[in-house]
Image (cartoon, rainbow, N blue to C red; front, side, top):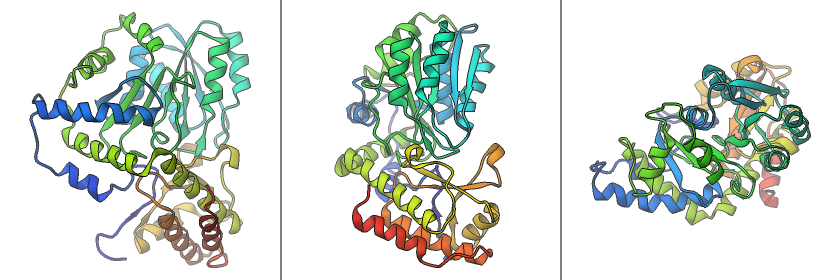
Length: 384
């Protein structure tokens, strides 16, 4: 391993493209000057197709969790009933936020590694007609599950007047999203995942139906008052000091997505997912999720007969390859590979090859090259 060499294959933060790093290093400008207005004016229309919406996408300085909390604070009030669908650690975070704000929180807990079954949501809504909002996670980062939010949105529209609020943090930018068509009322993501930026920005798109609810919400809020962001963004401005360097980078990210084309971007992510899954299947190492529930941005691998943390330490210390461990009850049972944003199929070939060597080093008997070959075959077939 060379000094300062690192291969970042965790599910966020993700690698930053060199041109984005260059954009973020440009000289600072006044946040209330015309240059900032022009910057936001350029960014606004290019964010909409990434979310699949006609609405302006709000930009808030803060982590993805700031966006989750802002959604709760603005869309529901203390005493309201909500339903949180929990498929992993970040669904649980939505439930924790709701409980912290005195909201009557119903939970549907789904086994980690499995996706939401829309039929169960339908039955729950029938039994609890007073639910004001349903919270779900698009890509559950802790398990590598991509939930069928399109189908869930259809169920909510047909059987409830509840708002549908979705955490899209590790999906938006790497997976197709059609917010308006799928009936999503509030959609949130963060900058440090498929959008190829450092942590520090959260993005939120809000439907007209949700705005009607938010405007009637008399809960006091200052920094997280979404109407302030909406009204200022209409004038190409922000209510509070923006993270200007990240906005410089965001402009370049959106230009890169334009150059590649969103469909090509999504296809690349699916190919990387298929390469990763094929590699571990060839090595007879089980995956946490089935193919139908698998996310194009992160894969979770079971470690039934080896210590995943020992493997991760070898990967980091000997090769500079960073992967992620399990969270909560999956700690010490799985490891996760992020393949999103500034990541290519060639990066996945490198990752799989290194992991094969590290598995041998920790005493896990595998045939060297077998997983890499399986990934190569997917790449050669264009398997997306």
